[in-house]
Structure formats: C-alpha cells, structure tokens
Figure 1: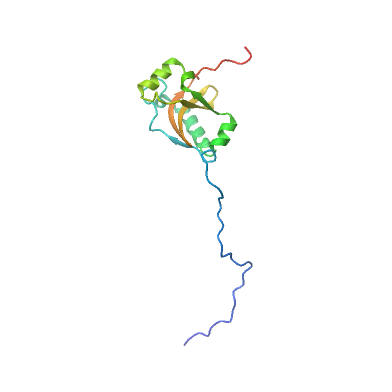
Figure 2: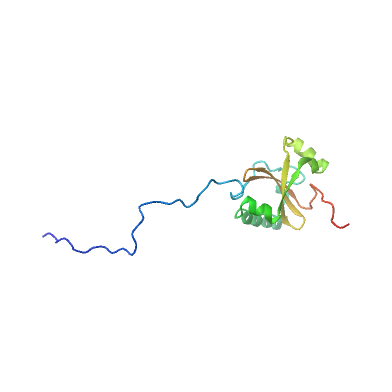
Length: 148
C-alpha cells in the first residue's frame, strides 16, 4: 500500500542566501601572515648550537616558539621582541661563523627575545624564520647600555 503525499510545507526562520560572500577580502601580505619556523639551517656544531640546550632551556624555547606562531609578523615587530641586526653589526667571531656555514651573503639576522638575556637568532624569508643560533648570554651583538 502506498503512502499519501504529505501536505506539510517546511518552515524556515530565514531563507538561505544563494550568494556566497568571501570571508577574507583583500590580498594577504607577509606582515599579516602568521610566523613559521624552519630548523634546516640551524647551526648544530657551533658554540651557539641549539643542541646545547638544557632540558629547562629547551622547554622554555619550545613554549615561546609555540606562542610566537600565534602572532603575525607586524604584531610581533611592534611588540618589540624581534629586532633586525645587520651582519656588519655582529661580533667578529659570529661573522666568521657565518662564513664557515656559507651564509656570509646574508644582509641581516633577526634576534628574538626569549627570556632575559636569552636570544634566538634567525634568518627571515617572508614570514618564515629559519633558526640559526641560541644565544644564551646575548653575545652575538652587544648593545651599549643606556644612560651610562
């Protein structure tokens, strides 16, 4: 036996829009992109190798990198935790180390403040930061003390 067709009409509280609207308007820029990390160029045999980290330093660095990934490049730069340094401003032994690593063609490196005097030195390619050195005592580029 066959069922009789129902006379019920579905009720909508709103009518679906047949037109799609984009969620993001405009072209993405590097400054608005989230930060990403690369480890392939890390100096693993030098004095400032990331392999020389203690367990506590490793956890501290890992937590900071995870927190940094949530920020975009412009916000991070404005925050003051990221500083570009030209290679001629670096200490002599670190310029020599760049030469040994065959990275002497770089114009600038970026310093990230991790905690106190601890810095992470990276190379920047758009929004991707390639980690190079772990500077535990802020030795790569000395800064003159203010008000002295």
